[in-house]
Image (cartoon, rainbow, N blue to C red):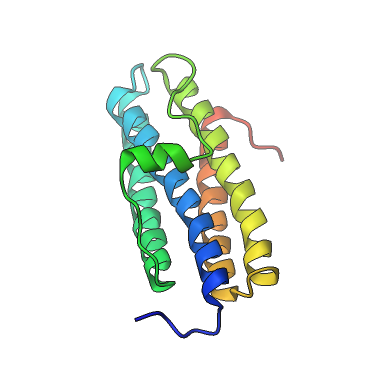
Length: 161
């Protein structure tokens, strides 16, 4: 049964398609963060190993919430790696070695890319598609990624006063 939530079928589909792209980005970022957790090397191994563990834990919850948001709009998630890679804005490869600085720089770029897409979608969802619920949802995602990006920048010493 299709949801009767005050959003046209066309608009629900458009929002679900954009959310599927965000879901793909989240899944790729989750995988890259797991990679950092598993492969970190250096004198700060233990600290960064735990740091990346915390970050992928947060991403895991965001992924689940995002997939459920898509379902609440009456659409299914195409949860295959092939589909995630086809829809993502992110690159699954990273630059640099297995030291914390290389991992953090790479992950920071991805978080900032997701922040930009969330900001664009929040405005579009509310104005163009008349879906303030999904707009509010991606604002929440944006805030989570802003905090995670801030923590990454702090580890690089890139916080300005």
